Image (cartoon, rainbow, N blue to C red; front, side, top):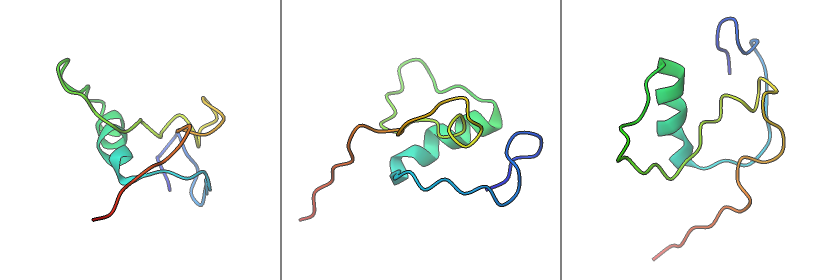
Length: 66
């Protein structure tokens, strides 16, 4: 992961995440806010590798197959 001026090249974060985080993280990286009525399931992951937030991004990850 690399984000010029924010996250150094080669930074690795091994906390578990899920694909639902892609949308809010991409919006944050682009500097765009989701519309007020939008309910995004994921979280913005950018504050975690920068050290702005610590701990896991999710209390639990659950999914169902079938």
